[in-house]
Image (cartoon, rainbow, N blue to C red):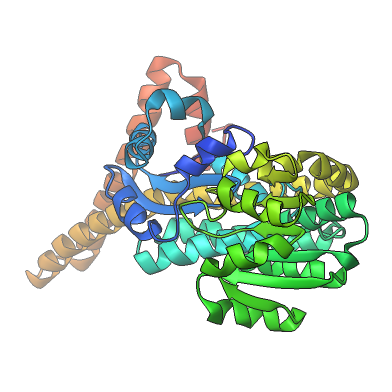
Length: 420
């Protein structure tokens, strides 16, 4: 029987620098899925990789979990000493609970943030297109999506509208106060930047510019906010006029370096600049934070705002945890029944084989002209003896061994009247 297994690191167990090295960029996911499902004992696999977590969800044979951990460190060129202390592993019921909590936003940096559900759906979609998902993981993920929907509709976990994007804008609002006079540069054009732009547009910022590798995607989201659009190469020209930079791309290398920001600050005559880097790997070099008039925040720096949001959501989170608990039990009942279904199918096949064998013998005797009543009597007796042989032998052995537990279970299964 297969086991459900999850292995990963997240913002609770690993530093930002380690998460950057464990993360799978979009360009590597397909190759990684192919390699993962080639590990001995791994039947199915889904890779979820976001700024706050990288997790491998697998259907595995017994004993394959250690192979998955070794594969991850080798594939990402990490030593065991670096990776092992940050890794967590869960199996079957705990793995199911973990995925449901992740999708419902209960394990996020920002409690209840809705963005993670879309990322989980995307992870499944990518794995499905790659052919690394079959019946078991697909059933688990589809059930998980239903759980996340229940949590959203039956609790107020999302009532405060927080996400990593929202927290970034909240941080900017706390620092600048009024955002109506602030000029903003958004780097990237993915879902996170789109959410950031929506929040900023609602704050009536003075001016927004969206920088992206391709202008077409940037134009698709910038039009609704009446924002300017530039390429990444044009960033040095506009940076001196910008008060707030929020960046979230999938670039494997930093986009803003210390030198570029330092030159911009000189042109600004050292007027301060706030930079919020919510990308993993980093979009903004860590050394930018050393500049006296540059205030750099990363994902890990948003914890104080996160804590405030968590206090607002604690009651809803408790309700959500109960939903997850109930749904996990229902899924595990189905999962555990798979082994019983296999045994029932095997038992029925064995019984039918015995029936066919005895029926064939009886039909041959009838064709040979033997007395029908005698043939039927012999058929029924031989069939009965064949069918009851195994349970009768099991009862006898349990009785000889004084195994009252087995005797009780066998008697219950065979519906035997204890008085008899």
